[in-house]
Image (cartoon, rainbow over all chains, first blue to last red; front, side, top):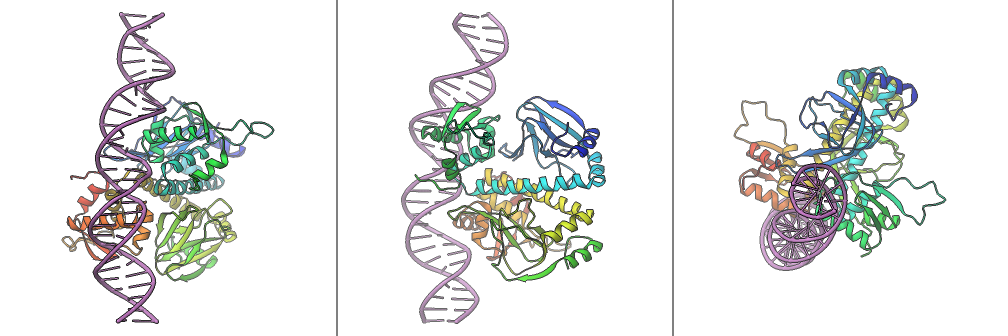
Length: 221
Length: 221
DNA sequence: CGCGGCCTTGAGGTGCCTCAACACTCGTGG
DNA sequence: CCACGAGTGTTGAGGCACCTCAAGGCCGCG
């Protein structure tokens, strides 16, 4: 079912949309093509990005479950979108979206709120890209992707989990770094016991406060 | 009058808001304070920014005439806003905005479109901050701030005008560079006849195509 | 005239990038 | 079973684009 909305609208959305299951690495949106579709992610992670002619790429965000993507006022998409892992989405066509927006103001409000939040995240990311060091960027990234705290009672000494379905290349393109710098920085954090690596796509945060300090530039060293 | 909307809504907005004239350097929004107001810029330029505890700052955008600012879903502002030059705004209070949104769906749609556009701009800026060189950043900035082409007939050989009401510090904080690098890069562009400096706050673009090539990384040299 | 704000220019340093080698995992096929 | 290659990640050595630090010029204003 289409996520992120209350039950009454849920039915309406489900009706107007079509469900799709996409394998990892599927191009959902191609930069510069006509903006015909609009998606709601119901499972998995999608990466959004922009590219330069010579291939340099910036990932502008990851869309997880509940997020909408593909909204634009232009006739063509100004960004690309590709699945990171297996992804389920609901797809709307443009005209369907238009009627939804006008017929259900409650849905339009929901969308306005989501886009407003995304804009705030984008501003935070601009601060990261423009003004933070590599260490600060990686620390911020790990913090943002940390799972919500365990429901208390246990997990205190365990450390909180970070899931990283994306590759080092994706992380680098998200943080405005190279894969080598990302790798080195994660290794350094591991060496100083701020985090512990399980495998490459799962990390455990040993000191959340330390990571928070790092992320905002309160680095002691 | 409050700009950027058609006549029917214009009157409604004007009625619900209060006009203010602010001198250069006025803090309109302070990061972290309760989000009580919402503005529409009717003249001048406002800079939006985020800061780190140690004072590093990233300007996330400039709001010119017609733009809205102060929208957020959180209870406090996640960013600051300060006037660049003398600025006129219409100010709404939160409850006023709420009623406007629900009573005039046409206005809500207008806002959704604006925020969607701002998000697209933010993504473009992330590409700039994460992946472009200093030359490419400055070239992109000048292109974006170029006045619309003269109504043809003249101005061809003249070169198109760029107005820069903000200081070098602001430009640096917007492009994720230092003032020295911005200054050096502008000097270099002048030296190679891509632009011509009138004074520090007005620049003339001699070759738009060259600037466009620079901005997207198609640098010949 | 002198001061402060803003900008420019130069010289040197450094954080991250580039280039390169190697380790690990996994699936494929001999 | 092992050899193999492709894809992904790690680590090291050296270089460079941009930052840092410093000096000086320009302009408006008291």
